[in-house]
Each structure stands twice: as structure tokens, then as C-alpha cells.
Image (cartoon, rainbow, N blue to C red):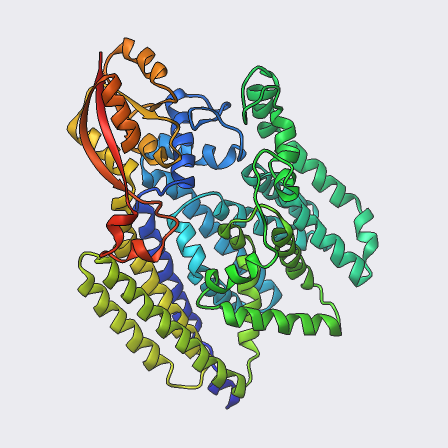
Length: 552
């Protein structure tokens, strides 16, 4: 009787819900590419295809040294098949994300059971920040999948038949390294080492298989090292980060990740030890409060004795600590540990007693109701087109939460959370982001220029960071110019179509035969503020960008 009262949704229902999440998540592939990071990465992949150069990376107007090659190779390969567009850029990330979902299911099913595995998959794919990352595609979905896959194979490599898992795990670890850098190996191998030391299995460190794993990783990342050597180490005369003699190999092994962690590299940050704690509170919605309780419950159980599965969560905990102590922090880094967050939360839900269930039912439904109403409020103040449809969908989601949440079952927690996440997917993919991206001026300018068939070489003036979308969306290669003299030199080959901010456009009109063609309103759409979200105060937050035609 107690099992019936505390019942989870059936496996069939959870599969249907997961299918809905995947289907609505796939709709984000058709959405535009967002500035700054995604548009920059998409333009780098575009340069690979247009230049037919898979060795040298070009971005921001010159040789580009930051992220490794793999995400750009995957996007460029997709461009070759489907054309250079936002769908092609996002598709590989979404497919790799589905691969990660499969690994999450297999890992959880091995640790617990099929029902917990389905629940973990539901939790993972309904987490708020993963939904955002599937729309605003950077490198984190790739990295999360590759790290999880490596963890899965290395976990099973501790058993008798280890060779296949060592090879597969090292291949996946190498893909992670070629996505983000060598630093990703620290929490992965560090977690296993800590587990072996604490559990008394320290001799495992000495086994040949793990040294073979490290050797294989270095073999598999060979293409990345060769490309970096060819582009930078063979050309010390190149100016990178404002200086010459920059080694791509050194940057890859040190400055890219360790330099950021210690704040000694060319790319610096500040760091806040509590950053990822409060980031998790909103990023893992609607499951975040359950997650924190589940983590506490897990720590209590670890004190009583460490099980073999503990290594999965030690890797996650070490990753979280490294991120927290790093001097360079961004919110999207946190999704790297979302799979373990999902497993912890699903396992905790599976052991809730009746009293705990009643408490969490009230908490979870309250969170989801408030969050749903907040989405409707944002739609109202932003003045999104067809807002009435979203209000109806919000009302239906709230009715579903209340109807499914009326019984004291674990399924009530699942229905309320997934109902909100489905509503959030609709909010992001069909209402808010389509309206928001009207203020991505570079994209609007490039599309307007292409539609008008303007003749002239496209140029971005003064290395605008907020011009990455113009570079990606404008057909063909887009040049950059820092000075009027550079523009003057380009004019020798014909007229220019120049994209610049309003102040620069006025200077160009005084110096050249420049004709303003169209103006575009721009806002930094990944840093939303209340004044921008409110349509009545929005005009004061907008910048103006101009498209000009310059001739001799």
C-alpha cells in the first residue's frame, strides 16, 4: 500500500514526458544564433568552411586562440552538409546532448534501476539552464556529454573486462580535452584517485590500465596539438593577445585553463567562492531545492560508508569545488555536473517517506506555480507578440500542476516540475527569444543587407564584440577594420558596406562619401535588466547601430 501511495509515474508516462521535452527542445535548433559567444563560435566555424582551412582558426578579425578546435570542426562539418545557417550550427550540439542523455540513462540504470534512470533523464533534460544552453549553443553541452561518457567508461573499467572501456573512455576524455582544454582531466582523474584513497583501494592507481588511459588520451588529442603547432608555434611573428612569440601548445596546456584558474593567463576574471552555489539555485530549477537536500542526504550516507558508486559523485563534487575556487567563472560552466545533480535528485526522490513527500509536494508545486506566473509577467511587460496564447498555455500548465499535484504521490512532484519545464521551453523557443532577438542588431543588419542585395564588401568597423552576429549572418567572409586608414585601403577594391555604432558612423560620414542605409536597435541580450524587459523603459537602454555604404 505504501508503495502505491508513493508511486512514481509509470515508465511509459516518463518516456512520453521525456519525448515532449526532447521535441520542444529540438525546436530551439531552428532559432537564431545569439551573441556574443555562440555567434563568435559560429563565425569561426563559418571561416573554416569558406576558407577551406581546417587547421587555422580565424575569429575577431585575425588568428584566434582560445577554445580548442573540436566544437568548430563539428559545426563546420554540419555547415558542409546543411549549409551555413543557425540550424546547422546548433544541430551537432543537440545530437551530442542526446548522446549524453543516453549515457546518463545507462549509468543511472546500472547504479540503481530503470525507473530511477528515466527519472534522472527527465530531471536532467528539464533543468532550466540546460534548456537555455540547447538554444544558446556554446561548448558546454559537448563538454558535459564527453565528460559523462568518459566517466561512464572509466567507472566500468574498474571491473574485470576493462580494455574496451579504457579505450572508449580515453577517446571520450580526449574529445572533452579538444572541446575545453586539458584542465577537464583534473576533476575526472582526481575524483577516481580520491575515491581509491578514501575507500582503501589505493593500489588501483598503480594498475597499468590507468596509465594506458592517459597515454591514449595524449594520442587521441594529437590532431589538436598538431593544428596549434602549425598555426602558432611555427609562426612566432604572429600577434596574439597583443604580443608575439605566443605558443599555441603552451596556451593549450597552461594558459587556457590553469591560467584562468590562477588568474595568471591572458584571459582573467575575479572569482567568487559562492558563485556556483547561488547559480545552481536558479540554473537547476525546478529541481534545485530538492538537489541541495539530496546532496546533504548523500553526504550523510557517505559518512556511514562509501559505496562503489560514490566515485560518480566525488568527481562531481571535485568539479564543483574547482569551479568555485577558480578566478574565471561563468554560469554555463555549471551544466558540466548536471548529470550527477540529476542522478542525486532522482535517487533521493525514490526514497522519500510519506511525510517528506507531503512537504516536498507543497514546496515543489509552489516553486513551479510562482515560476510559471513569473514567465507570464515577463511576457506581459516585454510586450511579446501573441501574448494571449502564452497566457492560455500558462493557465493550462498551472491547471495540470494543481490537478496532478492533488495526490500525495512522488508523481505529483514530477508532473509539476516537468509541466513548468515544458512551459519554459515554449516560452524560450516560441515567444521570448524570438522577440528578444529583434534587438540583436548585427543579425538584423546582416539579414537586411542580404535581402536588399547590397553590392559591396561587408566590413565591421572597430572590432565590435557585439558584431559577431553580423559576421555570421552576412553572406561570405566579413572583414574588420580598426581605423579609417584601414577602410581607405579597402576602398581601392570597390565600395564597402560598413557596420558601426552610431558615434563611429558619424565620424565616417564626415571623412568618407558615406551614405547611411539603415539603423538598428541593439541590446546585450544575454545580460537582461529590468529596464530593458519593461517595454515602457526599454528605449533608454538601447544602442543604435548603423549600416553605411562607403565609396570613394
